[in-house]
Length: 88
Image 1: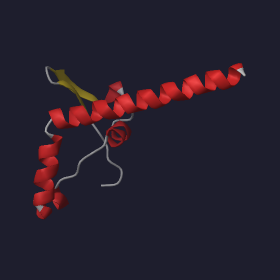
Image 2 (image 1 turned 120 degrees about the vertical axis):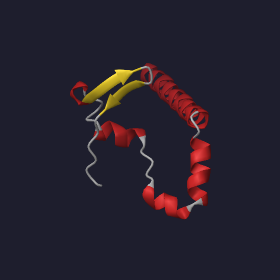
Image 3 (image 1 turned 90 degrees about the vertical axis):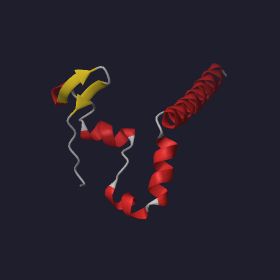
């Protein structure tokens, strides 16, 4: 019985945290002009061939999990990493 209760609480916690993360990602996407970029790219089909949007998973893989050895510089806007794309 206690294992079932603990499992239920754990699964509920995971579901809630995933929902919060998704909402946060959507809000950041909107704040940073993602909707405008999507609209622009979808209206200009030639541009879609030239521009590629990267997911956070793509960036994580390209920068070797944001390895400190890949840092190019740091400034007011954040840290700049060197990324290597394998499929381009």
